[in-house]
Length: 260
Length: 260
Image (cartoon, rainbow over all chains, first blue to last red; front, side, top):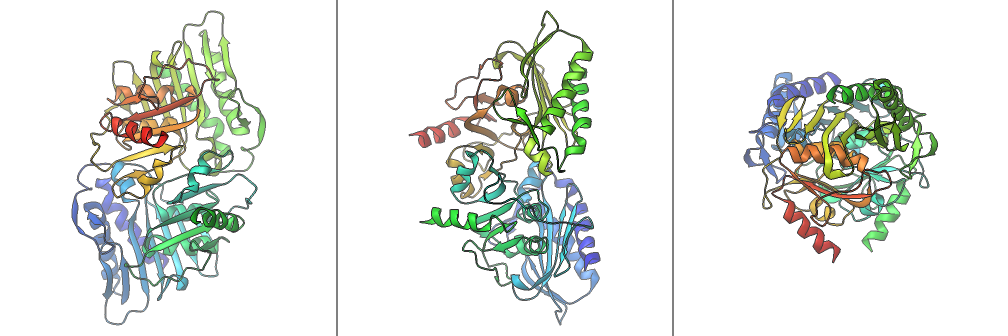
């Protein structure tokens, strides 16, 4: 699985190189399966991944951002949930924060058993296998140990209390623009939490990162504190709260307060 | 001037290396001149800069984040406005976005004549000399040409309309955590605007970036659209709006609406 993911990530990295921070890549080609416009750079990335998967020859079900759900071969062994380029906008503008996200599993988000996210700028690889821990470039990673009362740093998309954070000493907000990679930042102590409650994300954005956070000792739920088990289909929308676990209840309480 | 800035930036880059994403650097040593706690990593960065300046031997007035205002020598020729490490929190957490910011001028923000910002992760150098243009690694840069009606991407700190942006198609918010570098992103078309209205920033954060944006063809004002001429002292607080010029009025109007 690891080898297949590496091949996909390398192929995508090579394919998009000419479009980073350059004109042309942003040209809209068609409406993607996820309901958002597919830019040239997204199409190029997805084709590169598909080429690798077809050459590999295994039968599988692919869930990908632009193509949607596709069956390869005649007897799918597993599902691959792929975001060929997470952080498209960053890549087009030359902001060095974008990634490829690949998850392998069956049926729904709770049954992902392998997750792989590669930072296409630095080459850092975050990976996790169910019950075997999470790793950054082969080194074991753990979530942070910061608690409610400490300073903490979170990515918060789509709710007003992000603004309170900006004005409180000690608490910080970052909006970096690649959900898959921001989840890996939670897994590796660079952030203490990631929260997106815009009903915008897809399973393709979070499937790999969710497992990586969990295997690093963190907690991932929806915005009501319930386990995620969204079906692996591109139509599905996901709200997500991922944290080091220790600040999870504090964040849920803030969110409840805000929703009142 | 360029040589002096390079020497300072290199010395800082070397000095902080051991503290990136590692324990220890966050230890608070004392209360800095800017009124915020000085962490180990800030102190190390500032000392490295001061060492270079003392060796250089020129007489100057230094305005720096932790030490405040200091006179070197007996007959200061100019002011150096220094943020030895902009994005301290990122550096401590291992988020790859932090910089050194150096500006040279006299009296107030309107009289800066040289600006230099180095991304300490990628090594990219943004520099501008008054009336001579702005450069990224020696190549001329220009702000973006996006207009009000286009999609645009801004860093917005401290006002509620950032949330509206997060929920509008086409408009994007990034919070990257280094004001000096985010200003350079406006100068080099990676962002269309940068806005911080928290009354939190210092002249040390913005002095270099302001000139770099202006020399790249952009516009920089306070949050009321007025030219910045804050005195070069560490006590001063700055609100700032920097943009490609074309969306400046739109942003000012949104801010007025929000302030009602």
